[in-house]
Length: 518
Image 1 (cartoon, one colour):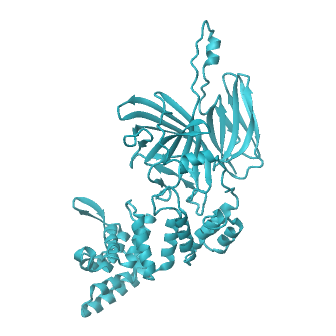
Image 2: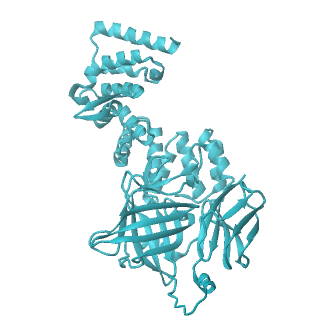
Image 3: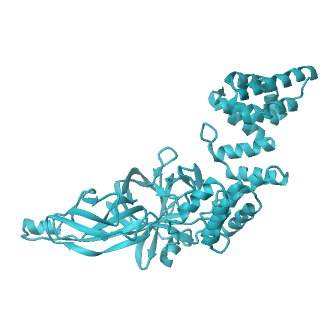
């Protein structure tokens, strides 16, 4: 037995012997247990069981209401062991049950621990996170002067990332609250996030140099990692047209136009996935996407459709129901549900402060569709309804994600009289396999080749985008005139190390490949 285990056993034995004469109160019993909570991980299972037996009568009296400190102690012990019980026919995690009770009855340590456990996945099961309750509990702890630094930090984080409201973006009031909470805390992670606010200009003038210095001065792993990452990235906001912004953001809720742009067969749209920053003051990503909606069955109140979404070189397919939102035709939706959500292709985490968190994967339970007119053209505006989950962080966020999509021009009906087989071949849209092109070398260096073969003359346009959707290279359009193998050589010497998307548009249809420059 190691020294920590022996120390814990001796200390508990001394407390038990003393209190066996002194008839300890439940508060004293809880104090006995909690005094050594930092050593629970070193205690043998037998000692944990003894401590659970010691504290259980107090913890379960009035379901934790009478002695919330004992309920909290019992919950921590069960968390160490991973114990379960059956309650009303359902399997329950004992740690969650008792810590929740203690927090409900406003025991300060439990209020803080329960919130942190939910936010950081410390429980074994996944639970609904009530951000409003966590926020209210933390505000209470601040008024009680209980661990204010960490409470301020968490409140600032929840406010900045808009986890405490139902708005699509972080409003000015929440941005200012986040700044106030971070500035009121000495917690290193509060300083970390305050630097992020300065770097991106949230609630303060944008000052990258000041932010990088703040990260440099904050001697924790997260800040040093983020500083190194940001120094090698172009994080300027991406310009988009005022019309696209208005239709996709401010004008979305007031748009009552009926959705007619989705046809009765297959309708294919080209456009962009747009990710605004939290306050929606800038565009963080502007990524080309292709969306096809194929109507397979028509019903009175819904359509059975196949959704095909191509983004960052990946194609997602979902068969689902396209329904009206209420009795009106001005908004349609697809409900993917909690258990089969639509998971978008993983995107690069724009604030990498840990090597294990270098991507963001958005998981969407429901998509809404509206029609708008942008620059005189019909457009389909797509947005997640309710919240979107960032899988890597287990966060349900209101990140203002949109897609602005334009229908492809329908192929005109051709009347061909006495046409030859060659004429018919020329009139047929070209179809190529998604892997028709080869990139070499990959990883790429200062120059790389794209080799491909197409069956006939067709226009080929090629562009290179970074992982934020910014176009970094545009190759002049060319017409493939030969049936044989073709090669495009691209100068990539000015590209920094990173992940890039090569998009080739063949006869008006985009194809994407992902490459890495080391």
